[in-house]
Length: 528
Image (cartoon, rainbow, N blue to C red; front, side):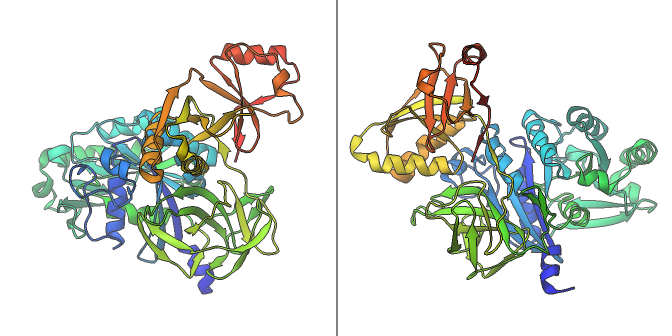
């Protein structure tokens, strides 16, 4: 096997998803810890201290103790090269999570053992189903009082409609949590928590060991034996084909905060996941190994380094190998170019790279030419990866500049933040950029927008909420929008690319527009 093929085959690229506070960022940290990428895990809860999660870099994230942007991290573990995409847990940023899942080959779903499947988990799970990607479940916080593990499995199966197969099984919970039983190896891993350090004490005890009852107690030993018998008799068997098409999820139990079960999870997960798989472009499969370099942009982030006022486009490499000095072709821009300052990123830490392979995520300097969904490929190839749809915003505000002398900074700031995909901006027909309508999927995005305009662009604005709840793109390019017969509470607007849209306060107004303009065609989704 050539080194090139080996490099691609050892890649594993996955996203971590969860409801807020299920422990997703903590799990990410512990995986980095085992990969040697960091030496000490910082507590995510330490909002008032200097410690924050490695993957949460934006100042507002540190203040609120939540993730509002997706982070990308790479590390090596054993013979694998791992790319972790850490996603926002907060539901107001589900659009960013959706785009990130487009770049992943599988997803790790983190569930709080005391709460089971929560609302945001359901939404993210649906996105995974749309992508037909494998889902691995890590039931976290077993060191706290938890639901019965059988109830947790039933919850996953009933709420999400996916079969489950526990790979390990918890022994107790809360203060009585003694470790996990590895079903494949028929042994118990008894952990001792060690304050987040990399090395944790682990005792391996065979199920038939005479020391078992001394270690975990008679009651827990009896319960474990009953549970094993029930799992073996009535549980779903592991079927990797079902896993790879999202029909069955392997389930692991543990505690990210205390390191219980994290490394066994990582080892089993890496064995079950696949190297980068073919992607669809123009209706055909783009093979990761047999196709020259290709990638698509799934995220753009301005001002990652405030001192440099820079803007980074994140690309998922889909095929071939990237070399630092290679010439590539930007399909949407219809031009050849060299990708500037290619780097891999660990939260705020960056490392300029000379090469990268299919499955890797790279960040390149973006002078303003890339958009989310753009395809980049080797010179001589011309194909386009499937676009990433734009979610319809659900909340709208009018934003006006306080100081008209700062118009240039305002236009730059709001345009750059919009290009990242966190907000969508619109203008009234024929209107300028002194006031714009901002649409967001979740209202917390308004707070982030105001914060970033003030802190990154030194711009103060006045924000006024608008009553609209629905937005529709007009699909007829030749229609005269000004002549449409519309209800009085409907507003005509356009986006920055000149596409015409309508804002509605109710579904009744949408129906009115369609009934009174028979030729009108409306869409809930825009294209990047």
